[in-house]
Picture 1 (tube, each protein chain N blue to C red):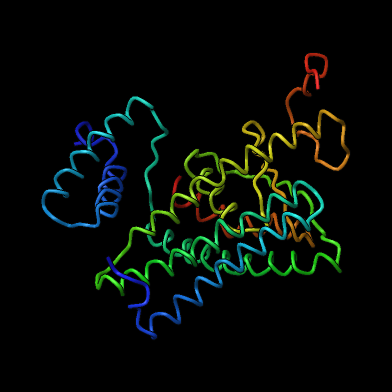
Picture 2 (picture 1 turned 45 degrees about the vertical axis):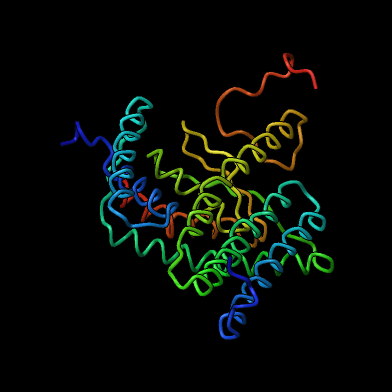
Length: 162
Length: 126
């Protein structure tokens, strides 16, 4: 089974992508999309990406909810900072976070989350020490940010991917 | 071909609000590019338009064309998805190159590299 369908999740997402782009649920498109999804998964085998298995699908839903809330909240915060930056100096700075997350796909997802929430920018991740450097626009307390990211994102990502 | 004037009022109001909201947020992001003083601060400004701006404008487009064409439309979700997936690449590239240059210039404002060899200054010609 694994031999014929090396990346089932990727094939399914490609099928969903195909159907969304064509805006149709006809049999022809489902057949064509499945063929493309399976054959592109075969191409992926040659690229040898890190294989990860997802666990705990309930945690994924919780994490998605947290990210959605944080995106809204941080958008409002950054807008406030920018609009007030004329009168109030912006207090930004770097935060170093000691991550224990090592899975490549989980790290990529963490980068997407940190970038999608304005106010935090991913700068550098050191693979040897596992230290992630981010830049925070509205920094009050560096240790609090480090704690927040570890608890809110890293812990669930660790549970989902590892 | 459908025309926007066919849009009923009950749909036009949320579509307008979402569009105006999305463009206002994008505008604030662009103002931020001018107002924020440091390069790293400026990294944050465009993410406003790539997250909230894109989401609101795509939502407006989804509602408008779903009402106009009388069917469910979801493919704008893909725009949001791909924008969110691809912005980290650009931002990381910009951030890392800025960090690298600042370290080479010996700036004290940026954190030192945690481990590994210091960048070789002799081989680089800036």
